[in-house]
Length: 219
Image (cartoon, rainbow, N blue to C red; front, side, top):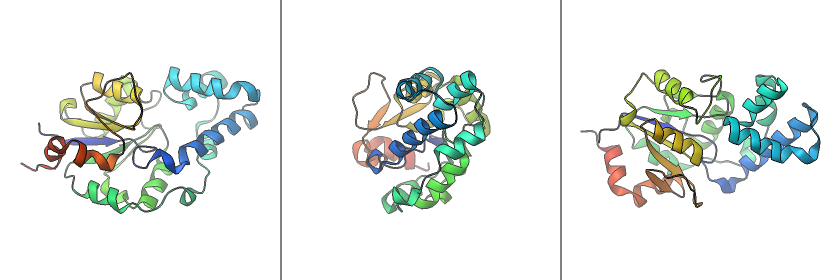
């Protein structure tokens, strides 16, 4: 298989969930829903999860049902001292440096947050660019409309030649349904199948050496 384009999720895909960053973002989401939207505190965790599962992101649910401002929400939930959670990752840098295909970040966050994360990890130069939640609106991962838009932004590569790496089982399932090869990043037991699954992104060459050789084969 000649793979031509790679799409990487950002949060809890490029870095491990043990950093605590995504947990901190969730806390900011809850505070936004309490302080800016005015929702009762007891219903917020359940409602946030409902919006995430129904619309792909909490943001989309808040836009549809509460008319929140996109820029205000994204700035608020990502207003965190990222260096308290992340640090340069030479192992990730070395892994990405071996890939010769165009690599894109495809995230349901915004590009400002994405570039801050990439800069701290030291991998910004490994990516052609960031495809963020604004670029694919009004859809978002895992909607097929969002995946189609991402492919268009990346130059319309054939889906069968693309690899999609993400920590969300729903996003992985959406990518596979669209014809992409999918790698689920995370060590949980999931009901959604993936083409491949690794606990951490940097495990890919060891866990699936044949697949990794196909990715790094320049033929």
